[in-house]
Image 1 (tube, helix red, strand yellow):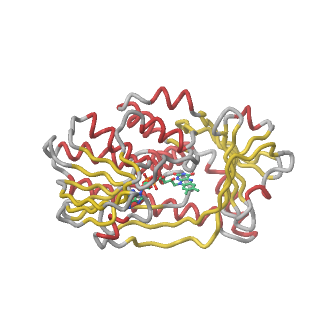
Image 2: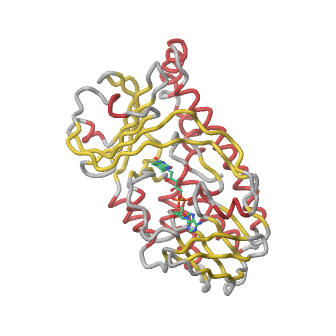
Image 3: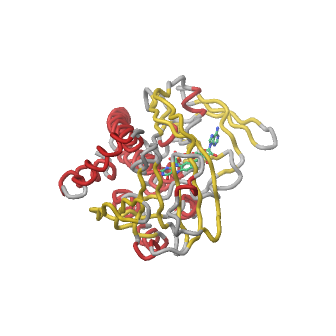
Length: 351
Ligand SMILES: Cc1cc2nc3c(=O)[nH]c(=O)nc-3n(C[C@H](O)[C@H](O)[C@H](O)COP(=O)(O)OP(=O)(O)OC[C@H]3O[C@@H](n4cnc5c(N)ncnc54)[C@H](O)[C@@H]3O)c2cc1C
């Protein structure tokens, strides 16, 4: 694609920002980037940066060291029951834990984002209608429109692209908290799997801050008894889905990130695979390979959704037999090196 092509990016979440950075790096000069929100993300939301994102995507952007400095390196996963460690798993490559607000702050630095502008219409011929906060409407035509506008993507809806899949029935909860506990020294993620199908994850995201989250409406209830929360910075309840767009492009429009796929937090793939979409898209643009990119990314994401859904099902199946089976599988999983490597490779690499 010509470096003078007129490009519109809708949405300045982590995916839109990654895309903008790479377009700028490759010398595309006519990029317009809008977001309907007046401010960038204030909450920590997605907190896990995978090895590929850190060591390839952020490295190419010259941001790897800053992420390493500001994030927490999670080296280990610990499966725990009532204060007793059942299994411990050293990660083949560490996970960088950092709040999404900080990720967006770093990615968005020095980029020209026009905020308070909402995209209300696009079509496959590159026409877009934008609405400013004062009600003023602008219409223009672009060579390329990218919808990085999240799960409820207007770009996807306007193009009539279906978002197939399912919504999980459970209400999830999360809290960013401060507490004093030996886990502070472990640099590890703690996981509890309960007989009633409840999962609990605890992970350090800052010097003294922890993310606690669960597929139950009250994650705090499941915390080990010796943990006492001293401060709560953010809490939320949310629903989780497993969905993928039937196509990633139509005519002059493309969708990526949550606009194109959404999954359960198991594996922490949501934001990472979205940023991979953006990174690989710019590589594909250089070779006029948008159609191949769209096919390849969709195939990759379908496979990823299959695995996150299967593992989520395995981890949350209710009943004593399912629970015993889970413990049995985990006992061997933590011992067999090549299975771990294969699984981690699946979750943290784009192909
Ligand atoms: C409570 C919560 C917890 C989460 N936890 C995790 C986690 O632990 N791990 C994980 O991987 N993921 C997690 N996620 C998901 C993660 O936040 C998303 O995968 C990630 O933000 C996707 O990035 P994105 O850029 O595709 O979309 P978004 O971050 O949703 O950004 C979309 C942007 O588009 C803008 N926009 C939308 N519509 C328009 C429009 N019409 N015109 C202009 N702008 C528009 C929005 O204002 C927004 O800034 C969580 C999400 C939530 C809500």
